[in-house]
Length: 143
Image (cartoon, rainbow, N blue to C red; front, top):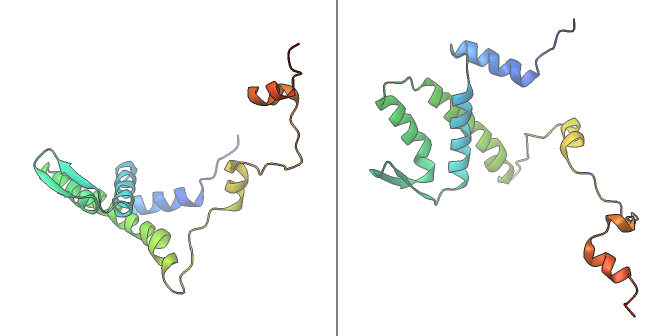
């Protein structure tokens, strides 16, 4: 029976989760996505339960405050905000600085698997594969 080895990112997540005594990091990942979205959309106005109006960059902090108000631990929220901030800095801020460069690169094997192949300029589709408008142009005019 083959033993599946986890990917390095899974190992890092599991190690960090154990270090922080967290075994499920789904909520932290969600908060990270909220943080990155809110930083990329700073001018969007938000409304929380009709009581609080604020700009989008404050959304993760409002959610953390609401979590604290409900009596939940804010460690998961802080972890998501911290990871989101690191990602946002490395992806959006640092590459745009003088002398900065993009540090987070997609591995080539993932590009090979998921990117669409470039179209061949010499490809000539069969008549059945052409769109209807093109087929009408190839037909002789009715007599």
